[in-house]
Length: 279
Image (cartoon, rainbow, N blue to C red; front, side, top):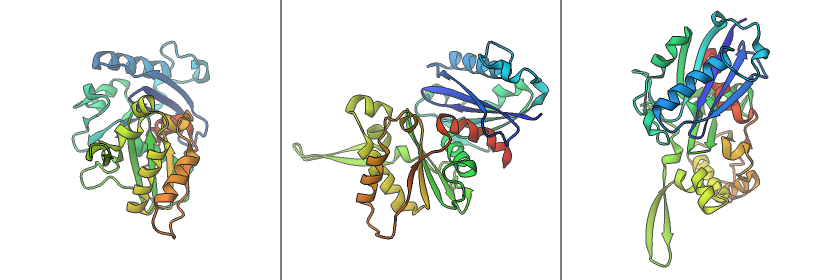
């Protein structure tokens, strides 16, 4: 049996799935909290991989009791930021800055398997496009809302990375908010207004997410928009509000773009990381 391990490194949690070949439709998943410094992060990541491979106290290792280390064919890793694909370096992880400059392949080579890396939201939309809510669509925008906000773009059925490999950083687009009392325009990033911390401090930000989605529909005119990440899977974001606000702001009467929740749940990014080996 050929196994593939998919890992999603997020600002709040690290999630992993171990797939019994790439046709596995119900891979087992496991998650741990993301440590806040590099030493603890690397230690926790090592434990997670060893546990998923049945070498430690993984609570469901009996599911893989016949697994042998030589069965592991590949490790796919979804990374939370901008990647230099030529040097295979995580250049900038906004919400995990201690990982700036990290070279994941050097870390994972100890597990004697092929390693592929990709932006985490690209992994999300690859998974949803291959076997989830966007299956069968040619032009897709995916947005993952959690600790931060990221985007993934499919054009003509293929992942769009841009000229420098950094397409989809929608969370860092700038929005201007007018203070009517002071008459001052203040600039915020979309992520500041609609990600996890904004929900904690300001309450429901579903309307802001709807405005952001409308902006992306204006730019890309996709067949479908797929929403994922912890803000969606936990139910914190009200999908109906996002849909209503987005439609209100879309100017073209021809654009009836479906805005849907991802079909693969909280492990979508990890599944997409494993599916890097389909490419």
